[in-house]
Amino acid sequence: MSNSDEKDLGFGGLDQFDRLIEEAHRPAQFDWDDSDSEEQEVAQMVSVLRFQVGQQRYAVPSEYVREIVSDLPITPVPGAPNHVHGVSVFRRQVLGILNLGQWLDPAVRRDEVNQGRIVIVEADSYTVGIEADVVSGMDEWPVEDVDRGAIPDSINARTRRYAAGIQVRRDEATVLLDVSKLLSDAAVQ
Amino acid sequence: MMPDSSTPSLKVDVIRTRFGPLELALELQQISTVLDYREGHGLQLVDPAPHLGLRPLGGGHVGFVVAESGPPVGVIIGEVRGFETWTASRIMSLPKWLKNYLPAVLKPACGIDENGDVIWMLDLLRLTR
Image (cartoon, rainbow over all chains, first blue to last red; front, side, top):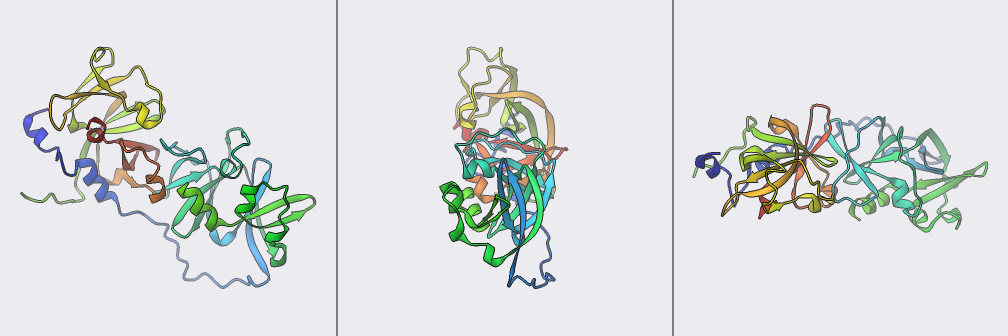
């Protein structure tokens, strides 16, 4: 490397990577047009997406769900805590991928998910992928079924903290997650 | 001094390396020489591994980084995979909450390769400072 090259390094200022980053930092957003979204008849029913992580069944209000994708390569993030599985690039946007099972029940060891799906949810300023072993489908729940007070003590305390409600059918409990609370906590801790 | 304009034509030559489980990119112009790890043996080397939550690799290549002052500093850079020229289209913004987790020796953004996989950008100046 010549001396003239060394002078161009910009010591004490921005280096070329910094300039490239600045130039690239026009984050691509999901180009969803929500303007024509029709008012749903949500007065009596809650539309949810149900999915499974390990043996635990969860649901999220469908209004937070952007997309469900599979076969998304995940790159680990150096320095990230265990509940952040990594990042994936999807539609020219880098998404953080949350290991929900690890976040809600860190004590339980799980096998690596090999053919999982990623449920992309968006709340407030966060767009995050949640790993799911099985996506069970959409459902409509009666509002009266979504009762936070009905969450039994058998559900662990951490899950209860992020539960907006629970529905029990044929002895199978599905926890409805408070997506906004979940993302804001899981993303900053 | 003329201000540097951030034009869309800005290009950066990078060295791509495989550092343990991580794909890394380093600014080529910050590196004067690349040696085999054994050739760098006996020299005092800076190892990014602990900063990246990894164990020392014990192999690969050593890059000599042009220091802010003093002689070049040897840095373990992993296995060199090749050389590329990047434009801004190769750089992706990270979600703000994820940037908080990144080690200080990585730039707060990432590159993507031709398969859409993530490449971390090593901040050599910060590492050797």
